[in-house]
Image (cartoon, rainbow, N blue to C red):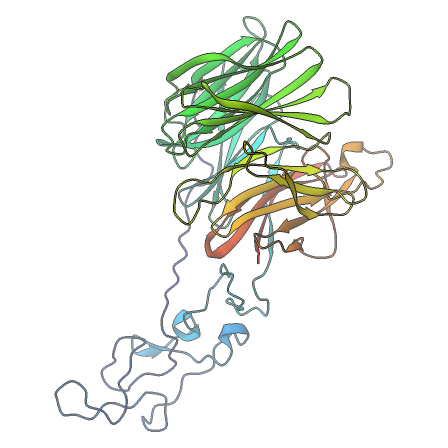
Length: 501
């Protein structure tokens, strides 16, 4: 597959220079010591025998105090202009306001750092317009140097990248041309390897005959391909889904995909290095009978091996889902016994590692899922997956708060975020737009909060109910999600920054 990246639309990274100081509002009238330092009056200065110079801006110094600063709330209350380079600051900065001041509040410290009267604010912003409302298979995000990459399919034949800074603000965009021209992109996923970010994609082509191809493309920290994509697997056009996970050291990737062959579904797998070179050849990991559907997911484990999961539902049935789990070594050879869990239909089970122990080492695999049914739906977790671990409730929610969830393991523990999406009337319109949402979160301490800014719900499309959740600097969390309106028809990628307790 040939891949060439078009130039970024606008990739000048804006560096916000925030000069910190002690916040002193006075200075001596003679030779000026370093900003933020002073010599106590009535004490010796060095060994010169001269008396210390009194603080400027005090009665003893005879120099007027600096004028009050522009901002008067929060940490800026009572601040006066600092003496900098022989003059008082014309516009107050952190030199005047003190070390707790931030021009744009990013810390979660219980203070009003930007002095706007709001402590630890929730920030809700439009990131970029989108061409459609992709579901969770077509949209993904990954932390990179200086920010984040977001990737999605445009609904047809292109793969598009957005480059976001550390506060989830758009900095540039690009498209990844595909050759030959495909008819559909059915999967986009970002992963980090020992060589940097990489894109896993599944694309449907029509020439010379209909077929499906899974590829790996190495990227730099801006999302630019490092070369042509490497074909991992391909076959006749059929129902196909796939997932990739790196080992914890990033030196190898486990690739899983699901084929429909002769009426049955097979989960196949292989391992490759970060360049896409095969380390363990493809083979069948799991097979379902012709009445079942399977979707695979893989997770890197602390011992260098992998955990593979497949969800099974009987075709056309709303019965409970069987979740098949099996551990594998680094060559994708089975380790120990498989385990079968039964969860409710549409539970959307997902794998992740728990936080590392205090003694060091990787966390343990855990299964997160939702129970979206009944009057009190809830989110659940199963730990000790291969030691008879049972489901435990993380939090209950109200009806309508069971759309797809996002989860991340932060320095403070597990964080969850999800959308409530009750249906609303949309007379004469597209039923997919008949939803309104609010964004909720559960912190590592179990506190559940409605993080949606304002009283109004946000317009949603039923297919784009996903949340991508990331830990930001200063103990903030960043969530990416989609909003959509039917009249006028619009789709918008939006970001939310908040401080989870």
